Structures are given as C-alpha cells and as structure tokens.
Amino acid sequence: MKSNIKKELITYLKIIVAGVVIAVLLNKFVIINADITSESMKNTLQKGDKLIGFRLAYLFSEPERGDVIIFRYPDDEETLLVKRIIGLPGEMVIIEDGKVYINGSEEPLYEPYVLGTPTGDFGPYLIPAGCYFVLGDNRNNSKDSRYWHNTYVTEKQIVAKPLFGYYKGFKIIE
Image (cartoon, rainbow, N blue to C red; front, side):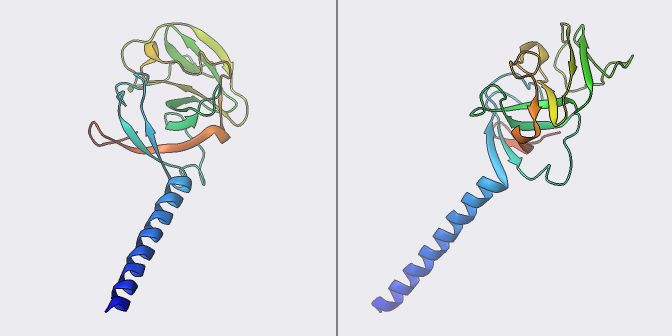
C-alpha cells in the first residue's frame, strides 16, 4: 500500500518538475511577458497593459516598418521598452512639423496609429546597418529615438514582437 502511494507521489512530482522546466524554457527562449509602463504607445497600448511577445518572430524574417517591438532600451539595456519601428537600416528619416518623411519622400509616412497631431522638427537621421529608428504612437508624450543618447535600436536589442495584450482587455497587436 505504502509502495503504491510512494510511486504515485513520484509520478506527480515528475509531472510538476517537467511542467516547471517546460515553462522556464518557454519563457527564456520562446515567449516574453512585458509591461506597458507609460502613455507612449497610447492608443495602441495603454499604460498598465501586459503583453506576450514571441522571441522567435525575427528568426526567419526581418523587422518591418510599422512593427511594434519589445526591445532593450539602448541607453540602459536592463530596461525593456515597447515602440513602433519607423525607420529601417540604410534609410534617412526626417520629421517636419510632426510628420515623418522617409528618404526625401514628398509624401509623409501614412500612420493611422498615431495619437493626436504630432508636432516638432527632428533629424535628419541616417540609420546605420543593423539598426532601427523607433517612435511611440503617442508622439507628443514619448521618449523615443528622437531623444535618446544612443538613437537607434540594434538588431541584437530586439527581444520580441508582441503577439497580444492582456490585463485591461485582450487585443491582438498590429
């Protein structure tokens, strides 16, 4: 009788240990949980939202303009931030009267996700190879590539692409 209970306890313990190992490996190599701690991505993401990001999103493809990314802040890599990619490697970005122009285009970038009417003139920024220029969707309330000491996010600093947000309502991140 005691032998059966002991075997059953060992079986349960193996299941629990296997579950913990799988959860740790998934969190370390496949997914990441991130918090939105500012208003910089409003209305796409709200302060207090939580995100699940996919660490392998850029394993077989390159980040694209418009992607929301989770990355290590270039001025303090211990801090994770969430912003939108605006400029790609090799491009020139100029912001005039709050509107973004890529490579001297006459037409500003179409950005339906931007909150309000952005203001200000910034740039030009010539984005180095392997780097990205990022901005918050709430441009008038975002500390982003325009203000950082280390202006660009490198490929290595990109941690994940958000899959969905939760906590204040489930939403797919686009």
